[in-house]
Amino acid sequence: MNIAEKIIKIARDARQASLAMARLSSGTKNTMLLKMAAALEAGTEQLISENGKDLEAGRQKGLSAAMLDRLMLDQKRIHSIANALREVAALPDPVGEVTKMWRRPNDLMVGKMRIPLGVIGIIYESRPNVTADAAALCLKAGNAVILRGGSEAIHSNLAIAAVLQTVLKELAIPEAALSLIPFTEREAVLEMLKQEESIDLIIPRGGESLIRFVVENSRIPVIKHYKGVCHIFVDQSADFDKAERIIVNSKTQRPGVCNALETLLIHRETAAEFIPRIAATLSALGVEMRGDEVFCRYAPNAKPATEADWPAEYLELILACRVVDDIDAAIAHINRYCSLHTESIITSDYGRAQRFIREVNSSCVMVNASTRFADGGELGLGAEIGISTTKLHSFGPMGLEDLTTTKFIVYGDGQVRG
Image (cartoon, rainbow, N blue to C red; front, side):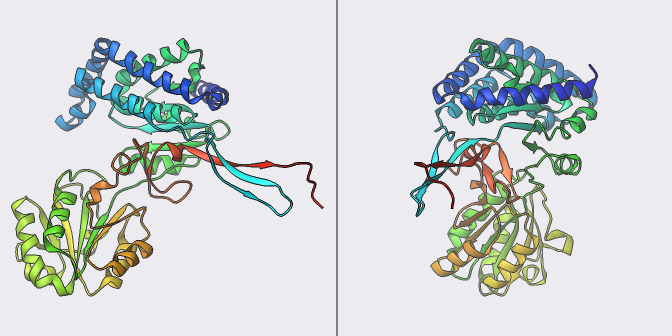
């Protein structure tokens, strides 16, 4: 078979396997995940050997030290991957949950029950751990999953998938419930994105260019998350100690991630007192500030900002800074320039906090907390498959529940419609 024919077969087999996955009990799924975790640890030597092929190819291609580090597997990382599967096994199973029931005037009982989405396609880059993490979440939610990792990790991904598939076979679960596309050619991705009759949802995980490529070429619904332009607004009633601590954590703990702070908004009434303080702190931490005219007046070491800075996702120690007249201006700025990821207000005023929560349109809106908490694990989801900045069908960090949908269930006693 050529690549297109192979992809079509993988997708159709996954569709068939998804029917079996939807029927599995929580106990069986948890046993499956625990056995997968043990199998990964037992196969550590083989996984490290296959990973070595990817590392050597990466060195020859001139991958950066950071990229090679993301790619690397060792005993400690494999143990961490296995523990992540155990954590997913411990999470509550959303499948079969009846989320609400109500009685109609004709005594029909109507409800909504959680069911798997069906077949989920994951397209991702670099990190081999995604192969196990994404598979575990999709399988726990009763779905079949088709994985397509980056070419730089092909040997590692194939080896991890093979280990997980041995457990499916051992438990008499269709192996097609977990498939990894073995082709590195772009044609494989393009063909995968055509399989709308077999695949229900595509989740891309990687940089903005990958996600835009998937969106532009997919016939299947795509969970989108282009970038994270996260804001903090320091209100006139803010506690400055609290504000400084939150801003520093949001910007500097891990500046290269999507929930790091990118734009700081400061109320005009606090500018003269707070800007010199926060500017000195950020400068000492190596942060380059790009401010509007008022901000630069109180922080002479800041560079003048341009229009291009307001929607920018820097992913490094650069911060756009602006002084605003009031909460109206702060909300207007955020709703214009944000990427619908995460925004936070630092305030002691309950009314303004509630207004910020109501009127800011992003998927995570916070009060007096670091933007770095916009993460499935930190928000209590246990684990996440990714973050959605579109509102259909999920918005924000996606956990197990977001890998399901609901169907209507109706209990009657002979009722007919008049």
